Each structure stands twice: as structure tokens, then as C-alpha cells.
Amino acid sequence: MDPIVRFQNICKTYDGRSQVVRDLNLSVERGEFLTLLGPSGSGKTTSLMMLAGFEMPTSGEIYLDNKPFSGLPPHRREIGMVFQNYALFPHMSVGENIAFPLQVRRLDRQEIVTRVRRALDMVQLPGVIDRKPAELSGGQQQRVALARALVYEPAIVLMDEPLGALDRQLREGMQIEIKSLHQRIGVTMIYVTHDQQEALTMSDRIAVFNGGVIEQLAVPKTLYDVPANAFVAGFVGENNLLRGRLARRIGDEGEVDMPGIGLIRGRLGEVAEGQPVVLAIRPEKIALGTGSCPPGEGNRLSGNLIERIYLGDQTKLTIQLPDRQTVTVKAGSLLFDAAEGPVNVSWAPEDGIVFAA
Amino acid sequence: MTGFPPTPAQKAGRLLLVVFGVLFCLFLIGPILAFVPMAFNDVAVLHYPIQHFSLRWFRALFASSDWSRALLNSFLVAAGTTFLALLIGVTAAIGLWRWRSAGKDALMVLIMTPMIVPSVIGATSMYFAFARVGLDYSYVGLVLAHCAFAAPIVVVTVSAALQRFDGNLLRAAASLGAPPLLTFRRVTLPLILPGVVSGAVFAFAISFDDVVAALFLAGPDQRTLPVQMYMRSGDLFDLVIAAAATVMLVIAISLMAVLLFVRRGDRLRQTGAQGAAH
Ligand SMILES: Nc1ncnc2c1ncn2[C@@H]1O[C@H](COP(=O)(O)OP(=O)(O)OP(=O)(O)O)[C@@H](O)[C@H]1O
Ligand SMILES: [Mg+2]
Image (tube, rainbow over all chains, first blue to last red; front, side, top):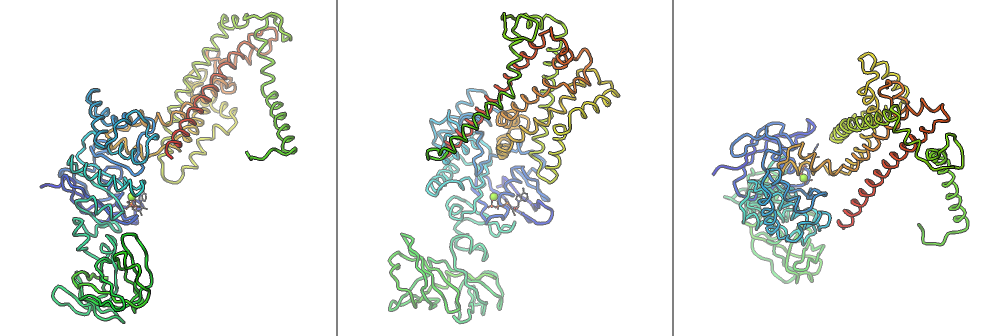
């Protein structure tokens, strides 16, 4: 199937010197929920703004339905947009806000009334139609913004950290709601966040941005289980990144030499022998053995338990290795009783991944 | 306000403030209060107390073709000035607001010059300049001159309103399909309206109040009310001038009322918005 949107060799610089987006190539599939995930300043908003028409690419072209797009002014692009600060018109009531895009399109009055009601029902906000935005809570305002962006049935809806201003509980509720809305109406959604948990929860695919380039574009599970490089491994989910040197390749595994610790085995990414590498291992994949309790099979390291953090359902333990690197282990809350001092950790070789440093 | 009862020194200070305030107000509006009642006096001398209440001076004002023409001229010129100053001032303010780069402050100061440079300088220069292009002794010339004084204040009031305007709303409107002019009419203008109305009030007042530019630039046909008053101020037995002053005062008070109304509404809206946001 043809992609609905295609960024082709897009570069963007604001000041002529620093490249905010570098040679971006990205295809967005029709109807998918694509998330742009990345640290602050990585170019996510800029990419979105170029698609919406509020910024011009310095070079390259954006295609919508295979037609070049960059000559079109924003108001002719038929792209819905939800902003972090909601951007509701403060002088209009909720109903007038949602009716605005329909009035712009000169629909007849009866049709507008029907559609506004339907949109409010869709975001589960009946009964606020005559209120002003300022009389609503943050979560309600964001629902209105969502309704306004969807009511004229654009093919694409962009959202730039729409839940950033909400508290955690509300945010999680809205994540699920937006996701199910997406599944119900089949609109293409492009969503920006720097919250990796949010990205994993909501997305069909995630593009991980870093310094203006896409480090990896994949479905959430692949991103989590098979990160393409050390950056993605460190950014998506929690990961221990242990530094060493690749000593030997054995099939699709490699042996990493860590001075003072020994050889550790892991799955190989694209690295050559002798190169400095990082080995990524997730905290929840590490087993902890204390005192008399024997460690598991595979890679075995000994170290010192130096910190315990109680998380309620889990305990987060920090262990210092002989070369002063630390590993974090997540384990059941029972382990909160573990005494500080010498411990063993172990994990299966296939759970660790070796990347070029 | 502190919660403590005031000390004697504070009480004395407060009393002094009240006394000073009253005296200052008397100084400002005392002459006006003394002059205006003359317009209602039946006798043709500046004399107290008023003997017979009468509207004869007002009747004379509206009956005289000179005076009523002057009143009409003042209104026409002020209306034209307000319209033109709004057109220029609002667009300039929005342009400045959207301007990201340096040089903005310098430009702002440049725009303010007509407010700072003595108006007699502006008026004389315009007199000579307009004479060259045949705009002296014309409505257009007078409106242009008043506009030079009035447009900067519109820029100031509208800029102040724009400072509280969220630029994201323009993007939101565009993403919803609204072309720029529609966005201006339905989103920008309603939200900066208090600034626009204040600017309009000031522009109208500046034009209505002007003597200097009108003396230089108005011919007999364009003579405005203040100029007419100035010309007739020598005649102590013709109190039409007091009636004219009263009319001007009423207009000024109406303008002030509009201003007060706009400010109040604006403040209510602001506190309302803040109150609900928390
Ligand atoms: N209008 C602008 N003018 C100049 N520089 C800009 C502008 N907008 C963004 N930048 C710069 O471009 C870079 C990328 O910004 P962008 O807003 O795209 O990042 P982001 O990924 O959205 O980050 P965040 O998560 O903080 O929102 C930043 O270094 C920023 O300073
Ligand atoms: Mg951003």
C-alpha cells in the first residue's frame, strides 16, 4: 500500500548552521499510529511543523498521497492538529470551538450541530457544549481539542505532546482513550512525545529521533527487544549499558572483555572484533544471588550491593562491579530485605546485546 | 494591606494623601467645573451665581452655521482619523508582534516619534509638505496629520493586547482550515479587541482635541471645534464657547466611559480565565 505521507531527504536548519533535521526519510502508512520519540531538541516538533506547513524544509520534499506538499499553505493541507497547550479559542464556547472548522468549510447549520454533538460524545464530554474553555479542567480541554481536530474528519491528525501538561493518572487514561479512538475511526495519527512509556503503550510504530536523525523505526516490541543501537537501547525502556571491548565473535554471539571482570557473552549487533562496545542488559532480565543463594546460569558477575530503592511492586537494586561500573537490577519487592554487601548477578547470554560504543 | 491596625503616623500619612488627592483633582478639574455652568446661564457674562437656567447658548451653538459646521468637521475628521489610525496601527502592531528578529525595538521607538516630538514641529512641517502636493486646507490633509499623532498610540495599545495573545491560536486556526483573513476576523480581532477599542478611543480623542495641526492645516471649510473656540475666545459676551466646551466635555466623558468599560470587561475576563484554570 502507498504511504499517506512521505518525508524525502528532508533537511531543516533555522539559523543556517546547526542542522535540526538531517536527511530525514520517513514513510507514514495510511491509518497507522506513528510516534516520534526522542529527547528534547531532537527535531520531533520541527518535523511535525514541516508536515503541518508551519515551517519550511530547508531542502527535500514532503509528499502527501505521492503529491509534493510543500507549496501548500497550512490552511489548505487538511491536517488536524492537537497542541500541548490545547490552543482552544478562549473567547468561544466549547461548541463554537468544535464548530469552527465546520463553519470554515461552510457546512449547513443543522449538519454542524449534529457533528459537534457527535464529536463531543466521541470524546465522552457531553454537557459542556456551552462552557468556555477556561471553565474546563486540563483533561477536558484536551478532549475538546481532540474533538475539534477530528470533527472535520481529516485524514491525518498530528499531536505534539498533547498529554504533557496532564498529571500521570489522567495521562494514562487519555493514552488509552486516544488509542481506542484511533482504532475506532481509522485516522492516521502522528504523535510526538519524549515519554518512552507513552510511546510503547500507544504506537503501531515508533521512530526514535536523536540529533535530527531517526535512530530506529520499528514496532514497539522490536524496539524494546531488539534495539538497533546503543542509543535506542538506552532511551527506550531502562537498560544497563556496560562498557568493554569485543574480544571474539562466536557465530551470532560475541565475547566482551571487561577489565577486572572477565568475559561476558551477548548477542551481536554490527561490530568488529577489537572495537570498544557497550553491552545492553535490561534490569528485569538480571537474576540476583545473595550469600548462600546460588546465582543462575550464563554470565556471572560478582559485585557489591550499594543501593536499594523501594518502588512498591518492585525493588530497584544498584550493584557496583569491580571496575566501578554499576548495574541496576529490578526484582520482586521481597528483595528489598537483601543486605548491602557482596552479591552475585547473572543473566542469559541471549538477553544482552552488544553494540558499537 | 497589612492586617495590623494603622499607627498614628500611618493615619496621618493617609489623611495627607487624601487631602493632597482632593487638592490635585480640584487643580485639574476646578477650572472646568467653574466654566461649564456658564453654558447654562441666561446672562451673557462670565458671572456667578447663575441667575436663570437656560439652554440659549446651546441653541445658538446648533443654530450658528459656523459652530455647527465646526462640530461636524470635528466629528468627520476624528472619525476619519480613527479609521485610518486603526488600519495602520493594528497592522503595524501585528507586524511587529510577528517580527522575530532584531531591530524591533528600534523600529518601535521610531514609530513613537510623533508622540514625542512637539506637535507644532510636525504640524509646521506637514503644512509645508502638504502645500506642495495640494493637501493643505483639505480634509484628507487634516486626517493624515491627525493620523500621524494617533496611529502610534494604537500601535501601543494593540501591542499590549498582543502580548497576552497566544500565537499558537493562529496555528490552530490554520490547521483547522481557516485562511489568514478569516483567522484574523474570528480569532485575533476578538481577542485583541480591548486594545483596539482603547486605541480607537485615544485616536478619536487625539483628533478631537487637536488645535495645533488644525490651525496650520485646516482652511475655513475644515475648521474644527477647538479651532473655532480658539478663534472666538476673545468675545467675552458670547457664551456659545462655553456650550461648545460642554459638548466636548460630554464627548470626552463618554470616551472615558468606553475606556473604563473595556478595561473592566478585560480584567473580568482575565481573572475569570485564571480562576477557572486552577
Ligand atoms: N523557531 C525556531 N527557531 C530557531 N531554532 C529553533 C526553532 N524551533 C526549534 N529550534 C531548535 O531546533 C532544535 C529542535 O527543536 P524541536 O522543537 O524540533 O525539538 P523537539 O524534539 O520537539 O524537542 P522537545 O521534546 O523539547 O519539544 C532545538 O535545538 C531548538 O532549539
Ligand atoms: Mg517539541
